[in-house]
Each structure stands twice: as structure tokens, then as C-alpha cells.
Image (tube, rainbow, N blue to C red; front, side, top):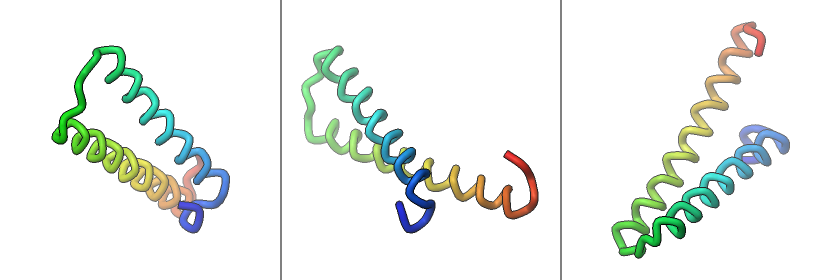
Length: 71
């Protein structure tokens, strides 16, 4: 992600994804859910969707800034 956004934004995105994974694993532990193969696939899919959301959000922000709008 560093090559797309810069160091600061890449760190923020990585921190967000790590926090998401931490909260998700804490919830799984709190509920005492046994991770089956389909549950592991769901966690991987959720992480992939979070990465995709970060990319879409940052691209939208860059597009709006390019059009002259302020943050």
C-alpha cells in the first residue's frame, strides 16, 4: 500500500486493518466460537473486503482533492 498512498496513509490503513482483525478475533474468543474451515474463509473474506474498502475510500478522497474540493 505504500506505493499507492504514501507512508502516513499506508500506516493508517495497516493500523485500521490490524485493529479490525484484533476486534474480530476478540469477538470470536468472547463468543467462544469454534473456527471451522468456512469460518476461517469468512474471516479472510472480511479482511479482503476491509482492504478493498480502504482502497476505495482513499481513491475517492484523492479524486475529490484533484477536483479542487477541500477535506
